[in-house]
Image (cartoon, rainbow, N blue to C red; front, side):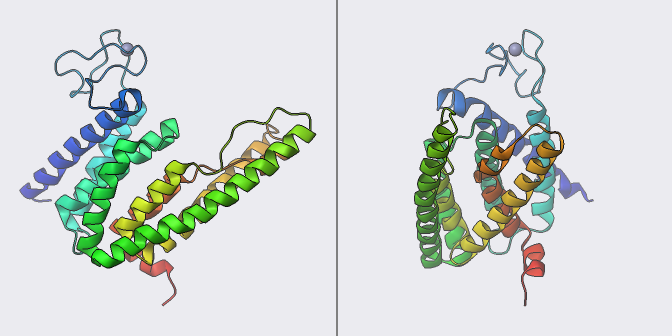
Length: 262
Ligand SMILES: [Zn+2]
């Protein structure tokens, strides 16, 4: 630790505030509006929002707020000392903020918003071009889009099959979607960022990760007898797993190359 660590600690904290702010206001208003309490909608007064103080009615900030601050600070210090090759610290931090915002909005609202997608396409194309060149970045975006399009169409088929099964079983079909169009857009952006062929590896890791964690959740539910045979018909929200997978590939390439056979 040297005095220059102050820079990534400070920048990481600011990046955390930015991720929290965007994840707070964008799902509510779809624009950069003044922040308000997630529980009572009261506007924050003065610097209360930035200092993570309770709202006027005494509601504490969410656990996510603190989690994001700590995670963002740690990511910043880590990127400062081991910056991704060809990308460097500051573009790496911009990418971190983008992926963080999309991750937490997807986790909390199961939403991929259009404003974040437009920003993401620009950030993805620039960072992809810096690391893999323009052609590979475009090919990655196109590859991600086409693979997800196939999954999307299969998902529609499965959803129809599932609705028919539920009706036969005398149940009201729900409108659960295997894959939303938001996921297709998200993977296109991740494809621009990672380039071809890394995007396809990112999808593979994301699907394995999502499958493994969902399997553990189903086992736990079955063990607690909270779930019957319907457990096998549970859909997995893949967006967050793709984001986590992309993050590891970009910022911890050493870990990835150790997993891949030489
Ligand atoms: Zn409140």
